[in-house]
Image 1 (cartoon, rainbow, N blue to C red):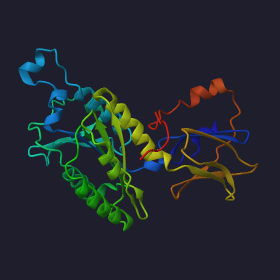
Image 2: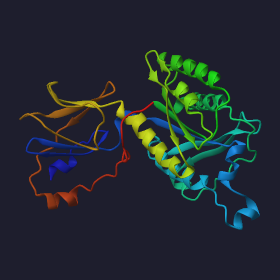
Image 3: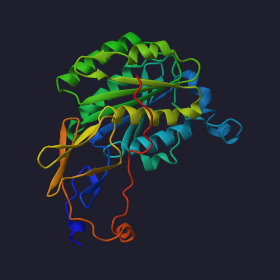
Image 4: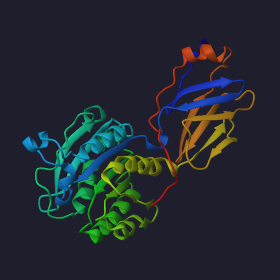
Amino acid sequence: MSHKHETIVKPFSDVHNKGGKILATLLHDPTIEGLDVALYMDGSASMEDEYGPRGVLAKLGGVRNQVEPQMRWMLEYLATKDKDGVLRVAYWATGDGSELEIVGDLTGVQAKDYKFPGPKFYGKGTVMLPVLRDYVAHIKNHSDKHIKRGLAVIITDSQIYDPDDIKAYSAQVAKEIEAGRLPKINFVLVGVGEQIDEEQMEEICHQEYPGIGHLWCHRIADKMEEMAELVAVLVDETMTVASGGVIYDDKGNVLKRYETRLPAVMEFTVPEGCQSFTLEVNGEKFTQPIPEEDHHDDDDDDDDHQPVQQSNTGNKGGHKH
């Protein structure tokens, strides 16, 4: 049938017309197109027990590496958000506490059985400024990759040594974003365990910057096993909730308004004779021609249009900073 050959415009994966009722499925979340993600894992001495013993001792069993399965889970999940599915991964707070040990550029597929034994040299402190500097340098060094948005996920189990430096540098980053020298960047900070200073985290994350709003958001996990799920929730909230969107017909009339987030499948009715609709998100507009009406029944329909797996599943909750 001819409707199969209609043009489907990104970010849509599938569009159906059933008597003027449109079902439009999103291929991905258009608010995070061009997203570059990095994951920074605490490598300070207080984390050593969580990584467990290495080498021969690791094979004796008894004490397992609690971090590794969480790292794999997070990497697989975050890779679905990243524009090319490759994440910059590093241990931070290593050596004298201000050093980084770069693990490498990893894909979600690699993450399934990648070994995360911990850093070579556990750190004597928890200095975070080098993480921010590293990520901003990474974004600037990859300007040829057309990064439209950045996201650095930072995990810690300790009080941060340099909160004032973090706040000063964040203000500088915000100015560069506003001036157009950097894409919009978000920092997701997840604290794990009892040594976290929540007041300190809130002080960093509650800062608002002119023309930008918040750069940071945070949550605290009581134990390591909760870490990956918290990261997923925070990333979903940070990268999608703030958007919402509006659907217009081909004459510019509003057909539907989404105040909070866009669902994976949008349903709305177009007026008779309408040739296309437009989705507006974050100031960007995506216009999709309306396909011919579906005349066959739903059973046949399933054969023609297999559902496309969505990368924006698992969205939960409201936005918290």
